[in-house]
Amino acid sequence: FEYKDARTGRVKEHPDSNSEQKYLTLRLDKDISYDRSLSLQFERMENEAGFAGYLKSDGTSYYPGGYWTSEDNNVALTYQWGKAIGSNNSLRFYHNQYETIHYGSLDATYDLTANGLDWQQSWKLGEAHTLVGGTEWRQEKLDDHVSINKGFTTSAVYIEDRWKLPSNWTISLGSRYD
Image (cartoon, rainbow, N blue to C red):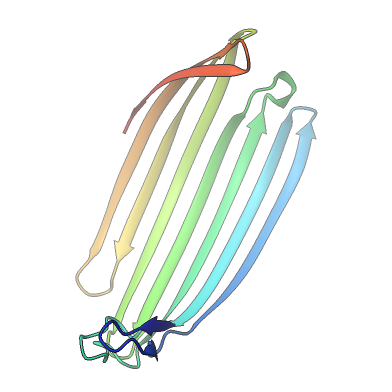
């Protein structure tokens, strides 16, 4: 990329600032019945970019000649039900895998893996009153192949109370615990 040197006012080019990205997405949807469906989603991203690091005050970089590559693969399976009654109920399983490798002056590799499960259910309690609740569970692991090889699990539960008001207004009160 180009930037303007604050001292001289001249436009300069930051070394090794190129970037190339490739994306591929695929989604398959299957209606199981009039209000139930199943979706399989796949996404892949490849990235290769220059990594000149940080610019010093003299305009040179800390990591000249560096570049990095990454691959990001995500897959999810989602089951939805209750569409016929206007509900947005779903159960979703997913797996994400992300790997980055830095080459040149800054040699580093790290992998991030995540597995998760999300559930959401809505209950229509009246013409203008809906209760929505759900849970989320996520397990992640980070490995830099040198000093970090840690995993952790997060979970949450939430509930939201929605009321439709006159003149197209809606009021929602919710709570979430992580």
